[in-house]
Amino acid sequence: MTDPIRIGHIALSFHEASAREVARVLESHGHEVTFASAPHEEAFAMLGRGEVDILASAWLPSSHEAYLAPMLEDVDKIAVIYEPYCIWGVPDYVPQSAVASVTDLLLEPALSKMELIIQGINPGAGISRFSAEMIKQYGLDAAGYVFRTGSEADCFDRYEAAVAQGRWVVVPLWHPQFLHHRYRIRALKEPKGLLGTQDDATLVVRKEARLRIGAAALKDLSQLYIGNPRLSELEDDLRRRA
Image (cartoon, rainbow, N blue to C red; front, top):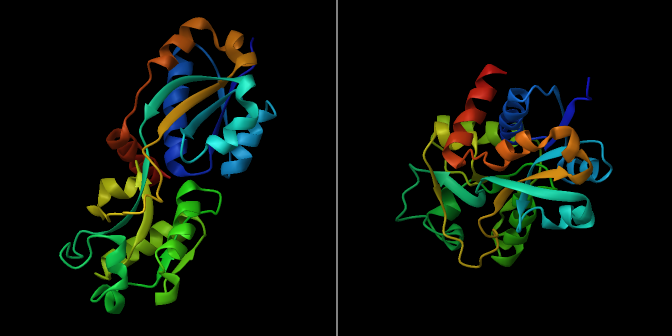
């Protein structure tokens, strides 16, 4: 009996949802699978150390290229399974005429009505690195805005609580993400281009694992495509069942 195929993913629920879709393909070929998750940098370190066979997935080039670079000779890029991108979003009840762009956060009525804490997730995430830079580059810190890192729950629960009370709030987010399946979130224009580009969520396999995975399973993995809307739905379903 061959060893299980070890699937690694960043410890966020939408990455888990995509990893489960990868597992479905492998299981259809008779493989047993195991899962391992860790924060961003450590998830890539697990791949580099050979502690996982597959990573679902690396966002390339904007968010994760620096994490993948040290191990490029040891891995193959198998498939692009969705196309993520980062946003700063506001609930759709915040009038676009009042807040259409990040620069509008420095003007009334946003200065009086918007919550000054912009709650993010862990500091290794691309959206967190981008958001911290935006606070400085747009001069939002001088106006009292603060970007704060934290857990998934810190970010997502704060947003849902704000929406329940009709408060004005900025959420540093991305597509795909389960909140988009629950709410209408409007992306703010970001003229400085600090949020990066649309990435390719790339399934990465260690070369040494290819033989164990097998040609047929690798072929099916190369054809796997989830897409942003479907992954948002899958994550939402995963979280509701947790």
